[in-house]
Image (tube, rainbow, N blue to C red; front, top):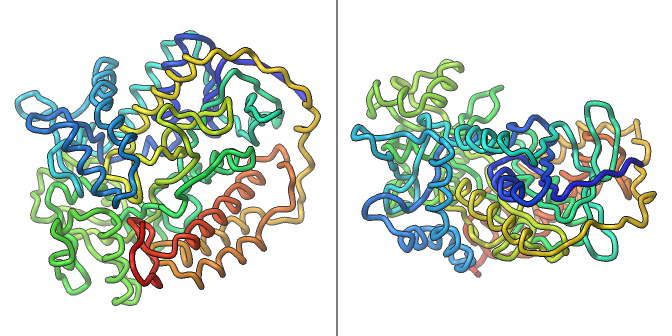
Length: 504
């Protein structure tokens, strides 16, 4: 088994991982591992924007109030304070590093509004390609740093743990199949979310819950896994992958219509079409149930033929490629799995309860999102807590680890008789049917039993990405079901159709 060393390992190349890497590179060699190309994570797909209290008339306190309200009383108030108060500085850094946020006609930053916000505080770039521009800016910054090394197509099989401390990462180079141990003074998990565990999702295929599974197997604590956010509006066409239709479209005034052309959100919530995401997603789910599974529609036609292709160029072109002109036709939409509010438990500095292991971004659970994430807080979270995790690491004196049991990590041979792709697809169907927008004890119990029957018979994974991803996905799916069973009443994004009353 080959063993190599670096000062710091960051697993994941999205906004949180890259921001951590930029900070860490000031003090030593940092190695960023991604299982696909560096820019293939969920950050690239973020359309809406970055929520930050920088506009005239807005304040961090107002941003805090909106975040707490959307979180259904389940947020960690201290984490929210950190997010809204440090967020402006992190966004100003991006501007200094060359990000191209959209400007208004006067040449000032153009702030828009999304669901559950009470101020125009969402910055966007290239219309509806904010995540791509954030990623571009951070990648460009990383490339200027001599001590930042990027290793794409390196899949992390697990964490290296001895005597209660995380010492590094056990990985496989997918270009040649070689496995090795990469030891470090600290490991940062920034692996993103779990959307690909569901049949319908806005997430890329890399979002298989690997970081959660690795942390769980290593003994770190996970929390709030029942809180999976379902984005209300993803493109819904037969035979077409779900494509996110940003909440910013409704922020500009688009209206949700049912099959009869009625505005069904009117009267359901004081904010109507801009109600919190869990409220809108359940309303759409109910409308679809009343109409034999047919989608609802997002009507943009009244917004003007000039605005739509300019403000939402990515969405406009995607819809047009599938034969829909959003200037003249309503867009068929339905909910899709989008964001994990729970994750690996950390303190406000990204430290987990496994020494040597830190986590930031969607894989982490600081409690900042509570039971339901406020729109466009995710990119800000990655920037703020990625930087904080790195800063905490640099404040801790840790020497290079000594590994005593390298032989334990020798991988077994894969079992060829198992159809791993089929198991993943079965698990995704189970999760969508029983652990999705509407949940019951009966359905969750059945889902857990069905998933248990799909588990892989490995103590350690072979040096094979498909095998490990399948095992991770099924493991995390079971953990979500068990968490959802344990919370017997509805709260935020977790809706129990068999609940008697809400509980916190």
